[in-house]
Each structure stands twice: as structure tokens, then as C-alpha cells.
Length: 115
Image 1: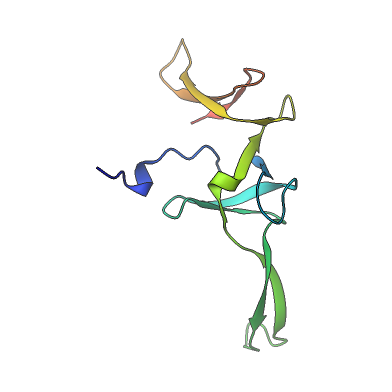
Image 2: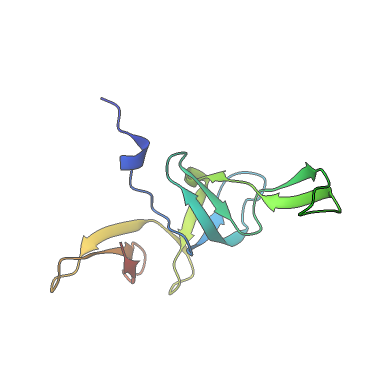
């Protein structure tokens, strides 16, 4: 039985710092602007830039070529821990005194944030 893409847990969220581990921008770091859960892609600031040719309109009377970020597969990104500044996987766990879940860095065991 196939799982729906909406049910897959995505390890990164908007605002996280990530590093590209595969592709033309390998080794670059950036901040996640949006996460597209249905496509399993994310838009990262300054990564995977493409040039788009635009026509002159009332909003953009100049027209021309615009450089913008394009979505990138989440499997090509790895979360960067804010404490140890290393690429890491995450572990989800519950905090003992309450019922909310948190994301934890697997390398330094630091709590990243609430899920």
C-alpha cells in the first residue's frame, strides 16, 4: 500500500538552515523559504537559481530576465544544527514533562524546536 505524500514526515521546516548535499550547488548553505510537502521539495534562499524571461506588464514595465530560486528535492538537503554547526539528521521525541514533540539533533542531542 502506497503512503500519501502528505503523510510523509518532512525533516525540515520553514526557517531552518540547510546545506545542499547533492547537485550543482553542493556545499552551499541557505535558509528555507517554503516547503512544498505535496511535491517533497523546498525553496532555499540563494540555492538552485534559475533565470526566467518575463514580458513587460503593468506591474513590471521593464520586463527582462529575472533570477529566482527554484524548488529543490528535500532528499538533496540536510539540516544544519544551530549549536554544533554540523550536518545532522533529526530525531523526534516527546518531552518528559509535557505532551508536545520536539526535533533533536542526533550529533549533539540539542533540542532544535517543537514539531
